[in-house]
Amino acid sequence: MTARCDAVIVGGGAVGSALALDLLARGLDPLLLEARAPDYTPSTPEREIALSAGSVGYLQQLKVWPQVAQSGVGRIRHIRVMEARGSASVALDGDHDDLLGCVVEMGQLLRALHAALGARLIAPATLGDWRCDGDAVRLSYRMEGKEETVQTRLLVAADGSDSQLRRKAGIATWGWDHNRFGVVASVTTEAGHRDTAYECFRAQGPLALLPMADGRFSMVWAEAPRQVAEWMQCDATAFTEKLSAALNPAIRAQTGAITALSARALFPLELAIARSFHAPRFALVGNAAHTIHPVAGQGMNLGLRDAQALAQAVHDHRRFGDPGHPMVLAQYGDSRKGDVAMTAGFTEGLLTTFAAPGRLPRLARQIGMRGMGRGLRRLLIDYASGRAQARP
Ligand SMILES: Cc1cc2nc3c(=O)[nH]c(=O)nc-3n(C[C@H](O)[C@H](O)[C@H](O)COP(=O)(O)OP(=O)(O)OC[C@H]3O[C@@H](n4cnc5c(N)ncnc54)[C@H](O)[C@@H]3O)c2cc1C
Image 1 (cartoon, rainbow, N blue to C red):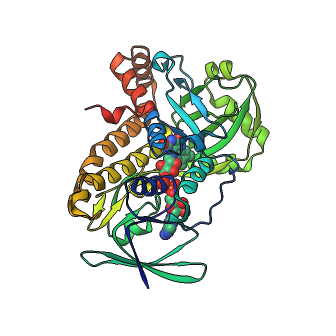
Image 2 (cartoon, rainbow, N blue to C red):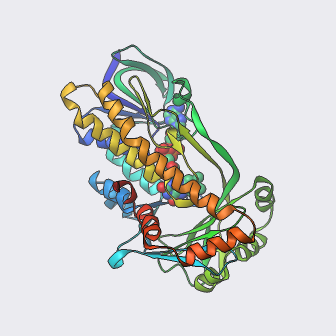
Image 3 (cartoon, rainbow, N blue to C red):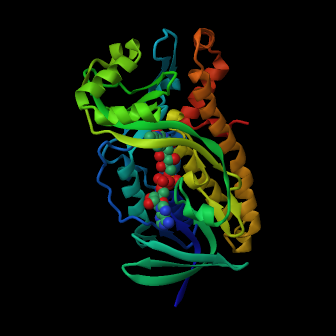
């Protein structure tokens, strides 16, 4: 027998899950298919995500923030941006002691979202064939050896950067491989973080430290593949020495010496933006729609804004009684283009500005950082806090 539902979302990462929950809260009947069996045990190293105040507000609206925050949240009150070797730096502090962002562990975030979805989450499920017949999308999936078929009005790809659905829908992407990997680890330092995130720009790639709930830092260090391969071979002591040497001495003076280091993990870094965010009865959200460099900590925030915008478009056109109506998809696509282009541009701009080698670009950066006008400082704070997209 073929089941029916308003929307099928494929990919139970945080973005697909938030969308399913938002649609459910607006009275729709969504189904979320996730390929992996749920496992919320923190990975080693922990996968920490900096969320803007806007994203935290969205999770509050979805009524899951108390569960997300239950086992602790890192608080970003200050951001320090500096070059690895230069003396110039930019200090960003929240207005009136406001938070610039929160750092949450991915498993914690997923556990809260999945718990709120209950039986709407089907996992582990293997997606079978799907096709769009004008008025509806028909698809099949397998769970526990049983084949199920579903008919829906809207199919959403939330299946991450390597989206199988995006490929099948024939939607190409533009962008480039950064030819860099992000090495991730959790780092303990003598003096802890005092609610401060550090961004240390190096010609080879940025090195970011995010404050975790337990006083440690979550590190992402971007480097060329050959160098990263060497780092992954060396022991913790040798890697700690390299990390310590790569940090600006002003950061080391604030954090104190590195006293412990977790296991290390690797992530490839690329820019890939879908040429369209929708097709008939089909929408892309999250990394399936756009994968950006993590330097500014914006990928998840952007994806959560996709979820919010798609659910809002469905709600705005509810008089059609059809969540996959062309007007819904057109509103969704139009509303996301600007934010995605601006955020990707901001991220790439940071990388390009700080990667240019030579004395003259360095001098220009130092003068720029020292004299950073109010406007630019405001822009950096707005991106960190998630207010940038609200600006014209
Ligand atoms: C090192 C690093 C640090 C980062 N730090 C930050 C940060 O601080 N702040 C920030 O905002 N962003 C950050 N990001 C970006 C952020 O992690 C991503 O943008 C975000 O996780 C994307 O979420 P998603 O739900 O779209 O995709 P994913 O998290 O990739 O989830 C996709 C889901 O789809 C499932 N799936 C795939 N194929 C199928 C299928 N065929 N059927 C069913 N299910 C399927 C997968 O199992 C997975 O659960 C960082 C990224 C990296 C690499």
